[in-house]
Image (cartoon, rainbow over all chains, first blue to last red):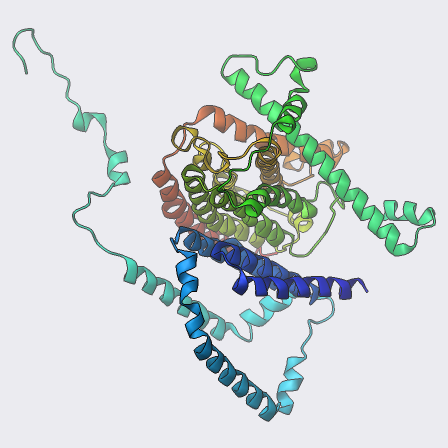
Length: 201
Length: 343
């Protein structure tokens, strides 16, 4: 009973906040509702017994990605009235695109046939007495180790690519070299001289 | 836990109600202790800073000024709560509430003694990390909703600071997990650590101590509220009860981070250095003493160091701590593998 109740609470808040993401008038409110829906999705994962994925969802998406998202949205200088002024003229195009997508999805779903092997693989619950985290780790680092490492390499390449694309050398700017600053010693730059009066250095 | 549940079933409660009442009692007990400890941390900070600066600190309210925090609390509650007209009302009010809720929710998984924990979950350390990374939202929401330049700059600084130091904190936690072989906090405390492993974790303890200073926005990394340039930072527009919530959550976060350090590095409720002769002292006392030690470190640093510059802070986080912790994770993992000490 309790699990069903928790499920309906999480699911209804998730759907409601997801709706608010696209209907909220203020983009910052949209991002905050997005965070709320991430949080509720994590709650659903916990109910499924996938606590590791739930925590990673909160750490990665809520704790890092959404912060940067909020960061960017807060800095944007948008006039909301101007944004809404021209919105109505796109409604017919949007409706047509959405309708075509819906029809395609319906036709795919109607023609879908599950392979008999696939349905056997899909139902692979965590073995009895093994934690969710342990089971996940065993699968990732044994059966799927190459796929996992390949995914990591793709992410690494994407990261390096982003840095290369946005990095720019600015020769006109004097850069601070901390190691050089720390390496400076008084002997190198200071000179103590005995000056007799009325003569100068 | 079982004892309290049995007590309620003895009163004729049905099983689920007995369980729920027992949990509610536990939660209230934790909340009370944490809130009280916050009051005395504030008092202790003022006393210790006073001693370091050769003055008395609070001495008037109650014996030795012990009741100073409560007097301050009453005063703050009596102040008018001002909400600026241009502020975004719901977010403005929500921000301090969220911050305090996050500071208290994390206590659900902290084991203060053997079996003394509200929720003994398998992914306790991840839960703690997730909740502590949520704390940034209170600051960033307050900064944005205040509709003030100083508050906004403070919120931005805080967001980048907390996100940067979380990266190295995550890698430090990975190190501890490699040694303990479990994500459960009680198992991490009880994990058997040979002396050479503990010595390998020492540099990680140092990095972690600096990172929790940055994570809680404490001196020398208290740039988000830097009063000399931002006149109070993200909380400049807050007053009355809402300011009290920020104040409470800052200190609750300090206590929480100290408890986290205690669980990860200082052996939780176990007697120090594994001395069996000291085991007669209850585990809670050891836990509290270790937390006090870290809290003293927080205050000591505040009394000693000047504030970092913003670019120095970022440089330390990304160019020093991140490469070092990344390297050290590999060193720890490699030596555990070579010496066959993996749990």
